[in-house]
Length: 344
Image (cartoon, rainbow, N blue to C red; front, side, top):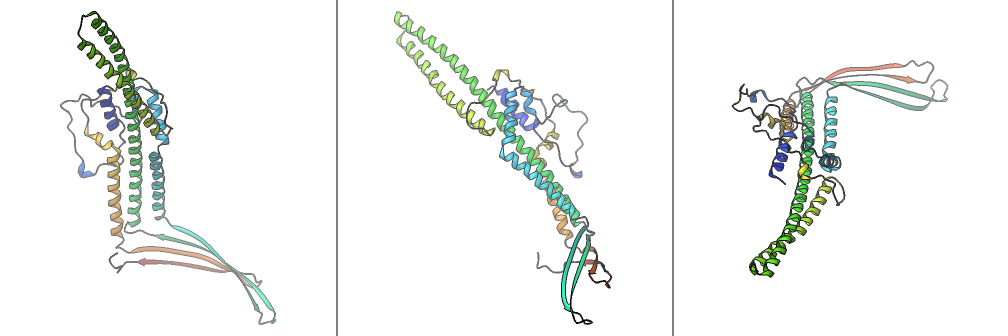
């Protein structure tokens, strides 16, 4: 493959496949760029898209990348981790909301009546409804919720990083396959020229116009090119098998275009440093740093008391004609402060 093709691929994998920034920059890291750069060529009008491979204008390349991202187990696992992190966000948010619970009891009692002396059966039913709410005065639960959201952002960035890695590996394998095809085509054409050169050398040697050395040289050049063809054919089969493994298919032939028909994207002369914030691995590291900071804040808040409010209401219902239901209710508050936990 032409060096320009590999350069364009490396640039697009690094820049065009980058994920957007997930978190705002910390206030202390804010840098004001100059209004005018010395050379703005290549900065203005840089197009960044998630489907950067379309810039090569090869439908077969796009189909291979889409199939690879749909069948790759790492991509599927990263997508599942996003769902897990989203559930953790909901779980952390639920801890800050009041809880409502319902319960009930039923009992049957058989005893002798003190009036008639006959056995009587009493059925008692006691429904109950309760509510609890932790006030979170010192922000412990709020910090845990923020940490869960930051971990969710990190999971999304990891998903983008895995997709970018799979897309880049598939594109590189595909372009390498096209490069081998082009090398094989050139080698076969070179072999035809070597056959003709050997024939001419044989005729010249037979007529005495050249020495045996020239014929031997033509023969050796022919053999060198002829030996390269089986090696390139083997390399092409191995590359096809590797590419089909990336796309989740069994080893076999791979549909593809031609190297000469590729549209090589333009390479900007200068890249702004803001593109570094679009890298998904950097975004994931930044989100995890924010999550760790909020987790530390929640641990600090554990040194402070927890204030909780509780209320319950119920009734006691007995199946006797002369027994009225009795209401049961309770309202209270509790403060739990850690005093000694053995250094935990």
